[in-house]
Image (cartoon, rainbow, N blue to C red; front, side, top):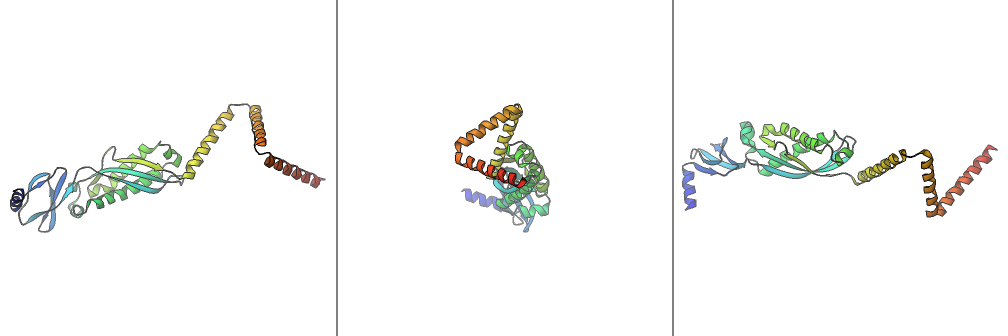
Length: 238
């Protein structure tokens, strides 16, 4: 019975469009407009429904590799983009092309423009600042702004506010080790700055003595080399 009713409704041009969708209506084979959601009426045998276009919120999660910071460090990102597509917000020639595209093609368009916007935003900050999380919110807002500007004419739009989320940042392994080493040295220098020079000299001597105990053969070899070098210099002076 349901199929019969649907067939009869189609004969008189009555169609139902689900929530968060619009129907792409073709007239004599050419794109005419989008209609819905809800019940719509089209001219039988002149108009036809090409396909349903989702106008609700969409999302895509994808990696962006080798994004360079302003100091040349390559970083890997994982982004999540929340966006929507509304054919009514673009021109008819563009809408005529986009309503025929499958969802994964629309997603790839958003991904490509988000990739470009992220690279421009990241290039303004150092890798250390990015990895410590300082400018993440600013980078996300920059990506939203750049993405909005670039895809607005296509009827695509990222969600305002939280439309872009940076889920993960992966720096090179050697970069992390270098940062940790530099941080350690910075802490040591700050501690040493609070002590008198004589105390620092005494601590260095104590550390040297401990190194003698830990590797006596290596240290003695170094001292003998130093004595031979000093003796050679003395003989040259004579």
